[in-house]
Image (cartoon, rainbow, N blue to C red):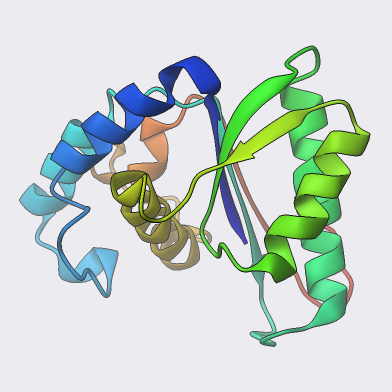
Length: 173
């Protein structure tokens, strides 16, 4: 589950920059299949995207539709938002998986915590949706690697980010 938070007043600007970045229109299957110069170009083009934070929770056991993973991932994401955005009441949220399985409980959790989330729609924000799909891919491929140069690390474009994993009931780090 990958979640991108944006200030509501910067969402349109973020979409414009994301659409202009080369990551949005290519069907990138692996970050490391791209040549280093292509990774650097994507990172450089995406750096100006105004974001508040990115959170990615990975299911290490790769269980599709796992209700326990869903519950823990949503709980962790709400906690991350509360910790990072205490005092913010109005934010835009883009989800890597926009299905109701994620969106509805996340929206309820955020609203209960006093945050008014506005979720991006695929048709209105295709650049941000492409960026978050690419970010999810990068998170999975790089989470255990420390050898990625900053100019080739897509996660470095975010002001704040957290990548965690859930397996056998573990909480994200």
